[in-house]
Length: 401
Image (tube, rainbow, N blue to C red; front, side, top):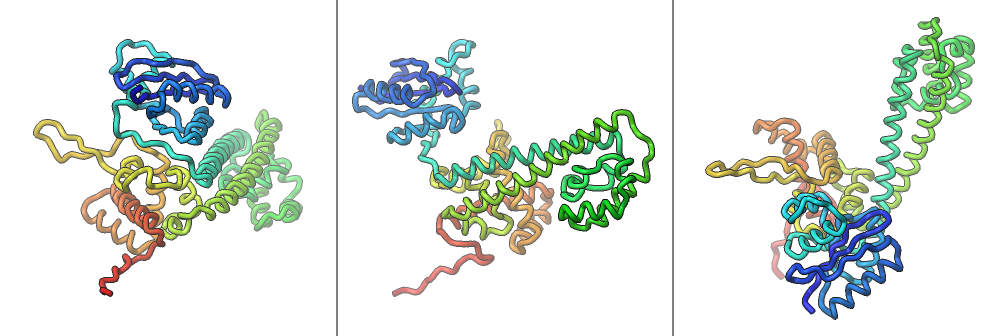
């Protein structure tokens, strides 16, 4: 029996698997529930069809509903390729028929895995990298929820108490949020007065309680008109303020968990030795790369995936044109771009490189991207050589024995 290729169109509750041979002929097509017993039966049946010949599996998801399937295949030593769903979508246009079914998608995945040689095999995930991926994703959700809640809070306050909305920056002031859990209307603030409000805030461990109380009462004295719906709006503001305080505490706990887990990774010291990369960006880098750079093969490939390597745009006699890629991993680009921005301010070596690019006529964004590309090469070398960053490259020992 020749080599087989098994393409799996992954879903939440069920997957569809199509197996083809070296000529592209369909050997098996089956819908399988997303459960361990059923998936193990599928693996056994496909290996039985192969009759000791190699089997290459391919899937269009690398997480989510395909996580159990991936763990089972890698745990059983199977070769597994990842074909992004966007790639499957574009490839489907070259296959006969306009219809879309799970069986057709599974066949396309298997056929693309059979023909292409540029797909990287998936490896057993680094446990710390998986944990960091979960924790950083959770932090993204929390910060997004916090931003949305702050916007709702400010919009609601603007409707009935604009003076107090202008008095504080609710995105950074925990004291202002604490104030809103107790007092939200002009009348309530005027009744309690500045002295008693300062005492109330101090009892809740608010810093600069007198300053906060003074600003709040001053805003209350600037408005004596009660806007229709004020009572209901004040109750909503109180609820939102409590939610924001709880979200802030949850983000702090998540940050602590991220830092503790990141420090356990073997590359943590090398990554954080780079100027501009702290615990959070370092943890995001590990989460995005899986903690193993060997899967990328080279720094150039990682730069391409991160959107830091330009792609040619030549046609006819026009050559030498390059442009930024349209498809890239945005979280990886974010890590290198943000760290480059910080390094351009605090690291003399990075600042000199940035200034040189600006002197060449580059815009700020272009100079930061060029710096990010250079820093990617440096970080790759640090991780490869298991050493930490130094402003000057290490001197090679040229003495002979």
